[in-house]
Each structure stands twice: as C-alpha cells, then as structure tokens.
Image 1 (cartoon, rainbow, N blue to C red):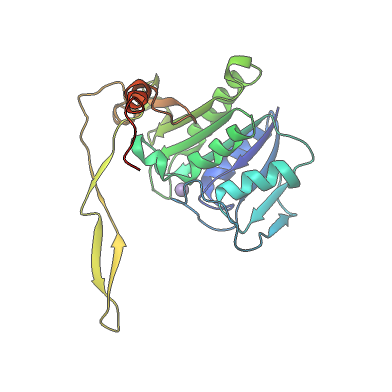
Image 2: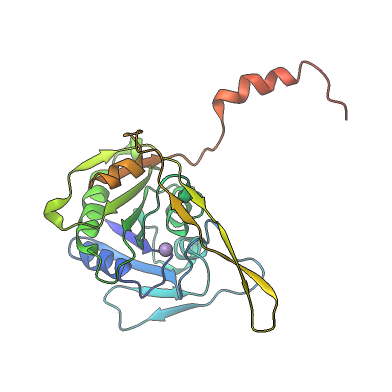
Length: 256
Ligand code: MN
C-alpha cells in the first residue's frame, strides 16, 4: 500500500522516523509533516498566511516539511503534493500518550482525522513516554501490523483508530485491548509567573489527576496495565441519545 506519514512533533521527530523505517520495508511511503513541533494544535488549519512546503532531498522517502499544522500537512499532501491518493494516513508516533479526552487537543489525532475527512482509513499512534530513549520500534511495528489489517476492508474504509502504546520493553507488553476513551482531568492548570518587566503571565502546566482506575475498559486503564490500546473514534460528534429530547423542545415555540 501507499501510506502518507505525518505527525505533530515535527518532521525530525524520532517517532516519525521510526514509522518511516518500519513501513518502508514493506510499503510505499511519503512523509508530509510540520517543519517544527505543533503538538496540541488540534485540528487547526492555516488560512491567514501562505504555506511553504520544503522538499527534503536527502530523505529516504519522498518528504516535505510544511510551515503549517498537522491538518494543513494532510490537506496539502492529498490535494497537491503527492503524485496520487494514498491508501491510508498514519500519524505519529507521538511523543507522549493521546488518551481519553486529550484527543480533542491532539494534533496527532487531528491529522489522522483529516485523512478520514478525505475518505481514507487512518491511524493515530502515540507512545506513552516523553523520554529521549523511548522504545518507538515496537509502536512502529504495531502501527504497521494494524495498518495491514485495516487495508482493503470496506467496512473499515473510513475507520479512525487511536492507538496508544505503553513505553515498555517489547517482552513486557501485555497484549492488545480494544477500548473506549476515558476521561483525563488536570489540576493546577495555569501557573502565574512574573516576566522581567514585572507583568504577570500564565503558563499552562496541568498536573494529571489519574482517576478512573476502576473503569477497566478505557484506553487509560489499558495503557496503565501495560497493554496496547486501540480505540475506534467517530468523526460524527452528534449526541444521538439527546436528539429525541431536543426535538420535543420544538413542540412549544421559542421566545425569540
Ligand atoms: Mn506531539
């Protein structure tokens, strides 16, 4: 298959390079990724300034470094840069997990989601570690194995899979769980500091509150137990359960 690789940690991130070397051994690969780290950019796109796409000639796969967000990269790749439509979009391997409600902020997940908006299957893959010597090799093999399962299945043609891999030696990974998104909450979200001119500024520095240990079917619980978590995500955010209740509102006219 022909896969588009992207990420939100920037084109030089070790997780992206690990994906590229893993996929290159069996598949055709192109890389279109941000020219710098764009973590936590969610699904932002650039509309108020031009985008530059720099072709990287020394790379082992056709590669472009784009001066935009992960979402920009996937849009530009599919519509403009790539010689043909890829079969799949793979985003990652992110430095750090993308679990539970954090997926709303994740540039890694948003890049995969952009692939789904183009009608393609897509995988976001994240490693639950920020360490420089983290084990990206195993996560890359997981991504490749899942991609090979996903390809060519009509029922999964627009599937979005969010994969999180624990940072453990390969032999200590305790299997794979299919999970739902958990809930992540943070404490002390903003730190107030003083700049050299005496003005207050705020820095987002939340401390994770690890609740939900009892819910064993979540992505958070799976990774905490040393398992690879695979969560299928929906791009349709409609809350179908509340539709009937809201429809009943229309029985009485609004005071407009
Ligand atoms: Mn990131």
